Length: 541
Image (cartoon, rainbow, N blue to C red; front, side, top):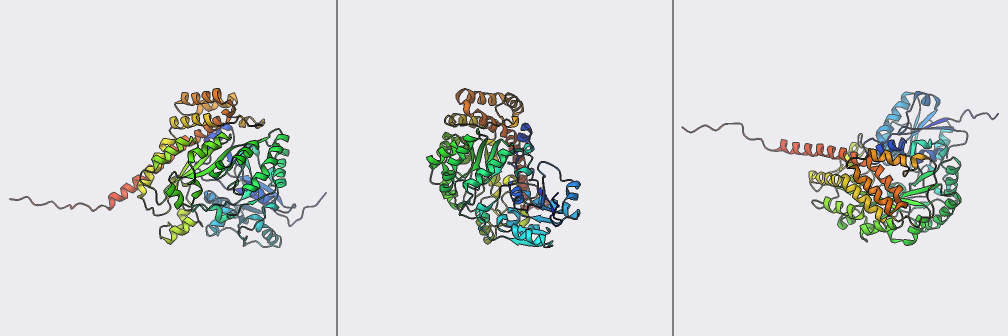
């Protein structure tokens, strides 16, 4: 019997909760499908794979399960961290673990961006894990119990990244798991922190690395949806074009066990070869940042790549390649015109994008936008950069002094959400999407046996139709139209309907919150008005 190294710790990985108020948690959709959260924590399980073999590791995802006293009793150290939207719960994890007498290690993008917000942690690990974790492990082994470890920027060799510890995941908790092919993005969007965290030269893994990760998931019995969580999958087109044929071959050899989604810039639509390669590799959906319909606004935010095209036509070309599009939009840029809501609504409708994530502009720490606003004296203090209780820019955006009247921006934002998530409008975009989403050339589809991922099963369809808001007949007619005219795309149309279970009610919640903010603005304006004189003029004799 092999004896355990007494110096080897029990490491408890704790993934903090995302704030509840967010477009991204799809709570009602997850409930319908019998899962607890959309995505699994790829960063922590990748970090776990870098520990020495003698270290014992457990994972608790607070989005899906409770952190118990028994977990903490077992642990010698707690390792946590994540995104800014997880800041509040990261602080809570630190508090709970330290109260239990356990040292806490915090890493990830949030602490890398705002280290001063996590000074209470015993250890801060800043930057990419491949570039610094070895030094932390050495220090811990030598008895160090406090410190800051900083990786040199953009130097981590992702070709040395190990296969993530997928075995730590409870697959039944999630809609999908993630893998990563590349880090970084070649573009210069002013509001984006990706290029600050990971650089503008995308670094890619090797084909054998990626296939080994898929092999491991397959061996563990996982089947279904995998998201390539890349900042921009096509940031290095040469590399991804070399990889995709191998991925397609792997899928064919494994009976199309997986289907994929990813994030990519809209210039994907310009490359017919790349679209065909992604189709052959069973990519079924793409998230892309559109941000604004206004070319002048796109130029100001340094997103010029979206000005060289008809945006709606670009989206339609992606549909023609068999991939649905979800898209990000932002309200609140400096040079927006009054009533910019109408062009944005028109673009979303013309492009037929059912799931449009529309948020208020938010200056993330350590971005070009943040530095510019700080220089101009318009940036609000740090506490507003880490929103309390909110996970996105819907209800807590505009953390700076706006050039356009704030009330006007909020009214525009409300109008966009109200119009695009009206059930009639949403169902109309679904119907138009079903007319354009061409899966006729797709060689294979996912063979997953897990019932929760079979969007097109009769039972799931019945549950969905019983859950969608009125007018239900409209959603039934939309699905029937797709089933008659484009049956090979029906499963993804059902999936988009399922997302509406969250998006519809959440948009109403956001509208109510924005109404409260507008009321506050009105009340402040009223209070600032000069008060009328209380004296009564004397009557003449």
